[in-house]
Image (cartoon, rainbow, N blue to C red; front, top):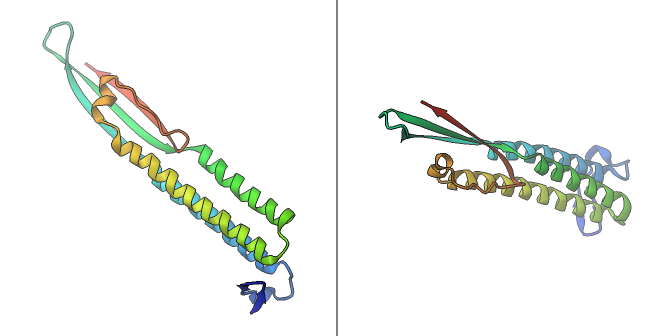
Length: 160
């Protein structure tokens, strides 16, 4: 095990390669980004639906059934943010890191930001889905979408 600066780095088989610890941490960042994308996809996928019977305006006594289905999908903007954070971190390591410890710190911070963004965006989208009043879906109420954290799709159908 080598000690570089104040950070202890386990190099293993990469002891002859000067950039070995940085490459290992970069691999961890890529795996963290893939895991964060999968977690965000799971957290920001869901649906809620409701139906209401409304009396027919013609007075014939038959009721019209109005159904609304709200589906929540992941937003491409969050995935783009993951990519931007990843490439900015790699660029900062390549251009500005003066020591291995600086490079590792930059990559670790990028992993933390990506993970936090995935959890935060997924929870904001899911909380929005749970807090939408079901009556507002079929009554024509106004919905404020959780842009850019999720991408909802509202489908309203009328059945006689």
